[in-house]
Image 1 (cartoon, rainbow, N blue to C red):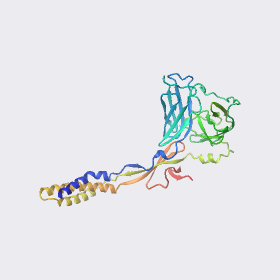
Image 2 (cartoon, rainbow, N blue to C red):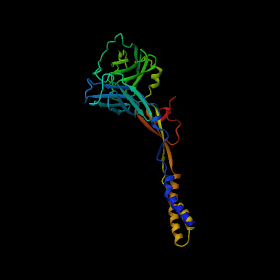
Image 3 (cartoon, helix red, strand yellow):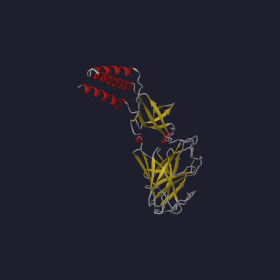
Image 4 (tube, rainbow, N blue to C red):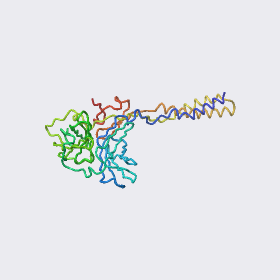
Length: 361
């Protein structure tokens, strides 16, 4: 009986750390599941001939903080793009001897952010045609798709973080894109309804865009293409009325709550916990056996009780706070600390004002 009590005290001292030491940080929600992955642009610098050693240079614009893999038709390997700045992924694929890349080969990009994946198919050849990116207004033959209109909903200025919204109207069922002089890569325009294609581009620090920069819209169906040059400024004039969508997006300090992490901080015990625990353990141990066995039990009980008392005191003094991670619309992120549970959830659209977060209705 007494032996079981002593062994119980020793076991208590041994396993208490597993009971009272909290997790330093627990993610309440996976950060990557806050919003769907998005691809805004996918581009390649094609090669003149697909000979071994030639390099295909890919650029992709999309959701920041992800990983990008490129699958190439006729290639024995794949390309992985590296995020060179927020939302900009770049990388190359070196053609191998065993590859069978032709003018008909295409490439598919997969952007993974957490457990969300977005895909885009390249709308131009990897070989030959398009080398050097011909400039100017291409001739449009009678057999090519038709573009009826191409315009932009411009911001008030072209500072980093501002957004250009491009709209192209024409033949439905095609693949539309746009190029802006001073911007590396190509912007994907998605068909939001039959024959209407729309896309946006967020100005980055490395861009060199002028108000009168040439912007070319392209519409492709199968192997036929039509192109048109934008005929308006990329900066809104004093009398320009922005669309409701542009007005809603002119919030450089806005973003989405990406994660809410619960952070627990273990308290520091004082001398009172070990003393109280030691006294209780010694009293319990003194009830075990007689003579020397009684002394051993008392010592073991005091040691186990002191450890238990210290652990209990630290557990009682444990504090926790909440860290809210916000992914800003310009691609950056910020973290805010709250002493209590914040009044919003992952996925909530918020605005940063004076160092605090407010919900955007």
